Length: 195
View 1 (cartoon, rainbow, N blue to C red):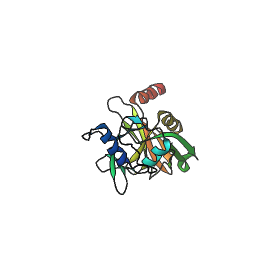
View 2 (cartoon, rainbow, N blue to C red):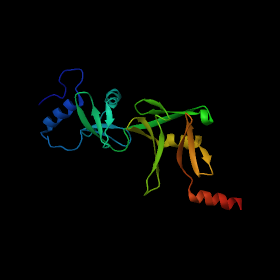
View 3 (cartoon, rainbow, N blue to C red):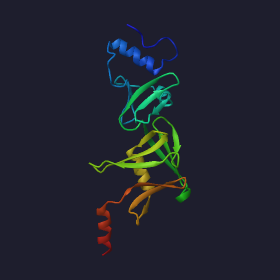
View 4 (cartoon, one colour):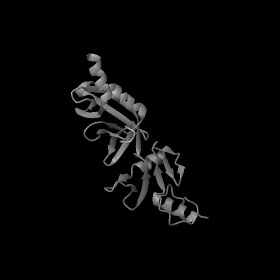
């Protein structure tokens, strides 16, 4: 039986994947060897990668192709990664300043910090079946962080109301980001309350 480690300080993702396949005797596996779960946990062959430093290292070579598929990519190799939702999770947010001078900082589950703004926009996708919002912030081109629910609640608390447009919005670096539209019920309730 071969060892996964070749004795070097570290193996490349492709070497790890190829060695593991040889050990399993299955080279026809079509599932990617690496997977990132919706909660931001990285897996290799179904087992969580517990060393945060290793996950951080892999995340530095994570790319998203024009087809929407994710890859660990170095100058000499490319290994596919299955991503359930977003490759990162925004686990905290900090607000500095107020109004149009306000800046929102996000920290990811891998300790990367970005300022929401033109290079790191915030957007909210709404599930058409459930109506549930799924907020994201761009971390690097093609790579987003799902904003954790507790962090999204902070954003909503910091948000301003645009009653004319019927939406909540947040400003960061003089850019306005919509967090969602008011529900019709709220608008009707407000109209009934004023009568």
